[in-house]
Image (cartoon, rainbow, N blue to C red; front, side, top):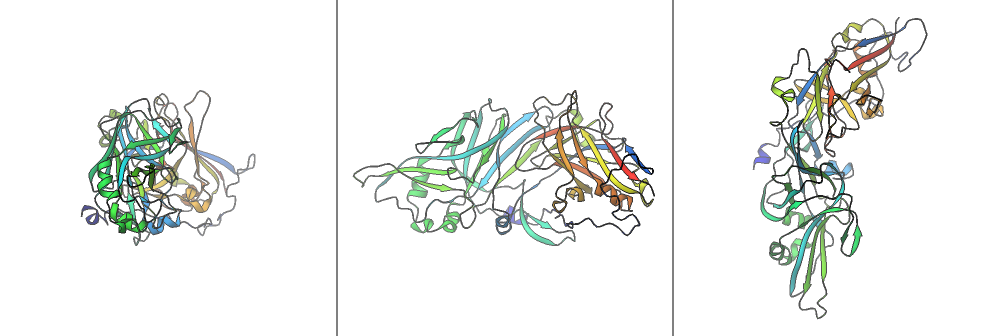
Length: 463
């Protein structure tokens, strides 16, 4: 099987930072750390405004862990992205959903003469990105095999610590179960479900003949428990085809999200309509796996976005950052290592990165970005300022400014502190903080931007 052959192809580095900041063995240690002292002799600031930045692509991103590890994190919760859209700055992006389905109740009894009336898949909306006025085409397929991880996680020493799912997962699927064509999503419009008014959702009709043969007439052993049904039914693959419009955010972990089968038993003299359900709830055992996978196509993007022509020596006027495993910004700070081993006390280091002016049309920017290390031609783990153990002190939130496009402010004091104490100066990467549960993207003013260049300001105390 392709997935098994590629099982060890992917890797990711786990952040192993300590909860406490550990200084190198220098006289300054942590003295003056995070203390900006105004008007005191010896206190100075340095400004680095000749940063080099450009855009780099990312083959895939981590979207989920193996079942046992994901269970410890609360299961496969969060937004699942579905849809496709094209814009003039980033080209085309697509998001699909893979989802196992569990029983709403065990040992289903369809009666002696069941007749299926209708079947549909309902998935609750939790937001959207793009243009929901454009019609979309959705398709639903049954998976033809199990949902196996397509990669591994390595620790800092290169030891495999877990298996994982990445955004370039290739599902095995066969039978088409249903479709919804020329549909304009309405994420803010409540709808009626099972006689009740519920939160807006995507409702896709499914093939009744398939469910008659494969559910109504299924062996009773398939309904003994969740494990038996997941093994029997395999799961769903949901995608969009030949459309450009929006990417909707779906909340599968709700009581209403799932497959709804309506039937009646002709042997029942009341001929009362009945319903059975199959859901994605993370309270089931085993947890039904669900995740989103992504595809990017940059052929329609502008020349400035040409990834094969990025100027990594002088840098670009603008650079790009995108969720869904797309692209991110790489930057370096020439001359920063000139502060090394001089006994400086690093009080604070603030990196300012502006949105590129005039590029906001049609793009909703990421509300927060983060900074990671960039080594060996690939983005690695977060720098210490963004480690969870440091309570995410690095910032990275988007702040609006009068007459400007807005800017991201990063506190990278810990990183600069390490450089001041002799650590090797490395390239860094700017990437969305939320990568797999949102579809936002942003165009950033680069280090060579004439209006709002990327800059780093360091407040320090001289010995």
